[in-house]
Length: 280
Image 1 (cartoon, rainbow, N blue to C red):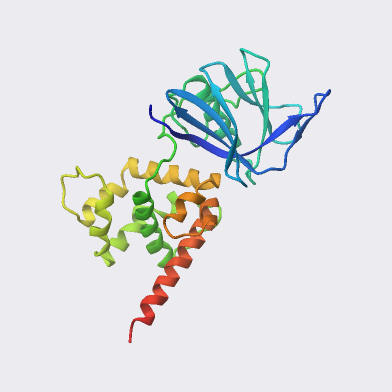
Image 2 (cartoon, rainbow, N blue to C red):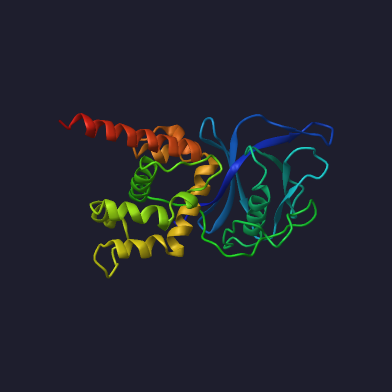
């Protein structure tokens, strides 16, 4: 099978046209839109976040569809339209904040135009697609987050140290604001025993021996910053409950940044308490 994986994901519910009218009614069911590439085909998937079941799976061909805001609707309603047919699929944004709506829409349209589109976060120089045009972002950034349990464990260990050390994390803060070289390097300086435990999770072809200098180069690299950013985005979709369970964290830890950090803090506190009970 060709490479498959989630390219983009964000919270969105479905909406349905009222029979015999042009009115669209949003369904209250919590869901998410995922773009995936499977066997070289682009899939737009709608998943029910309550049941974790895929309820819609659409195969998309390059330049055949656009994702655009419904200008007549009062809310954050969007329509997936096809040029090869009269199909219309309506969705509404379910993230509490609308701040990232344009970024998601630009990236969706980027993939609809070119399945090899690279995800771009941040302000876009191109306008959001209207109901008649599709604006595809062309900025370059890494693709969607895909992490192994080992990589998750590495990140969890770093977060446990950072959060356990007293770093606070407001709900609007991103992981890139927390996992900075300035925050992380003092951990390796004061706890050098962390260094060899992290290296098994790093690329095996590193030509250097474990050291704080090597780690500083890694955590300052664009690749690491991009990986953290992608994980941050994946957490914001609320779809990582199954993955974080492999770390011994509750499923709700995978539903967002704040729940994840709270769960890591609780785990760090428990480990500190257990260490304290073992000490005379």
